[in-house]
Image 1 (cartoon, helix red, strand yellow):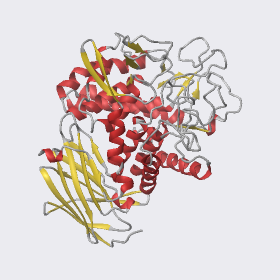
Image 2: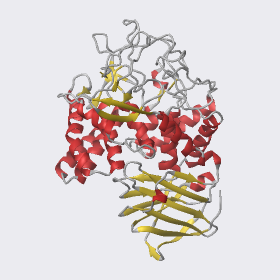
Image 3: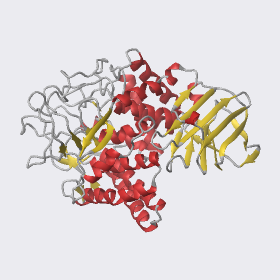
Length: 535
């Protein structure tokens, strides 16, 4: 593997696609935050609204950030090293004053927001993504006990586990955000649990823990612990079944299943579509039929909304200011603001579930949004006005949002380009190129983990009679799921000139050819087509 591969790029000849990788890479590099704590350098990705390292932001941004930043591990290590004996993980840490001018001290500060129930699954996901990038089994084996403790903490704590439903619970927040509804009993944003807390079940917490449990099963299998792997698989399956029985309303996941009787005037909670719905799909908890229903719900609302995009944090929003801050009006921030984070997750879900052209449309709309000024924001008002310090509850509003932009790059790399690492360091991969959905005939894809140099690259060509690919990576095995153009059907699949077994599959109206092959360096793949007719 020569150094010429040690880069990340996508080239198709389409500016709206090719421009996303360098532009998002520049945002993510600007979002890297370096801290010196106990004489050790700690490096991770910060959200553009505060100078602090939150595990929620960092773990999501790592999906794309690991292609550009060589330190994939130190932030996760620090969250593990500061874990409490109970298993609780801090939300964030910082050495910067947060509320100037009232706070001036540059001490090292650690914070846990009690109303949040999602922190521990994000820690597990962050560790997993870092392991994939660094490809170090000894490192993840060292971290695994902390990951176990974190999940046991959630399942055993009365604030976060509802035994009656067998699901994670939380205070009444807007989706996964960190302040709770108090019916006016608190004079600002409420981050604490108290006697006035209204309890309920939020679907996004549970899909996050489902994915975390599945990660634990995979890691235990990798490390030769099949009994523990089976335990976590059973935990995941039970959580999924409980969630889908409790939180599904027939069209999408209910925003908040209330455990305490509380009614908010003017709110039709049955109609509220909240931001974790596309994430539920990508975490694997939704069936294909449920995923299709959620995607169609977003498409329906796009047709009906006056907003510039359907990437709602929540829709319809809550009444103005009822969460304790006058800035939280309908259409602002997490109360109905438009979030690229949601758009990226929605695009990835669309690619996986037969709405490939919709996924392309989202990516191209995002490129149009950010390319003019080369700026991207965590959220926008429905009319397209970006977040600002004056309109936000956060101390900053930098134009380098890595949370949403990394979700968009995730959709591009894992959805449209279709490269998914299902092991570590690309040693086992799923390759699902969907270029016909973007009317792309020729593509070059290279993805490289900056920390280890492990990479996967392929060249793709769609001709009149065949799809030809040359794939180069360190994988031992590759699973292919290749979108066919129009109404074409595969006649044969050859690997390095030898015919291979394949299957034709359908995802909604889309045809795919599926096959698995052993890999050995550069491998040539040819899918011969019959009836090559473009839709």
